[in-house]
Image (cartoon, rainbow, N blue to C red):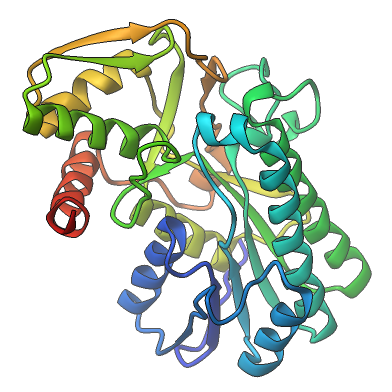
Length: 317
């Protein structure tokens, strides 16, 4: 096992520091005593702009970069704007990595997504299953961009000798998530709809698809903890999965979220909507071998997420 000990005054740039993953990384780093964390809002530096990304890297001069900036969204958003998901994520990744490689930034952690795996790959999903079959059509463009990011890290390691790594999280949720009515992922989407149904006295809420699709969900702060563990203990030109190791059907997830929110109406299926990938469960044996497992139960994480939604989203609408 390789152990990397970063000085607590190392300059760490978190690209996408206000997003779900980025904000969780910020909290995790602060809790570990890191004192030189840098985040640049997109209004000040649009990382889709090559020159803006270059200026950020030159100004910050980071020792470590966490590349968490990305255009993200659920099934509906991916179906509606595949060009945007492909193009914008490719731009962000290439701009930041090219600028970082040119400056010789010694450590970069690229955040991918479990959607990189083939739609019908064996479960649980092992790292070696990458590019062994067709992708899930509903988020194919986003997945291709993330695969390109993995290959970019691998190429930089080969060409420049920089010890960059890639981590692949399962579906993340938690404080700081996007609760947009049309653009959110499954957990924040359910929380918002069930909360609004409870407040407005709606007797029935339809859940997308058959309810049989299964998803592995990882609390964002657990993901941050696992990613920081990978930074310290993993060094490879491939990538490593970071997940909870457990999955749940969409139907059971909906029932659990409804209970957490306190919605006691009827849940039905909207069969006109797609299920997406039938199952996404990561094989996390490599992380376990490095000494890490997640620690937050799904119900505990959902309750913390709902509390955050009530205080930070619902209270201001």
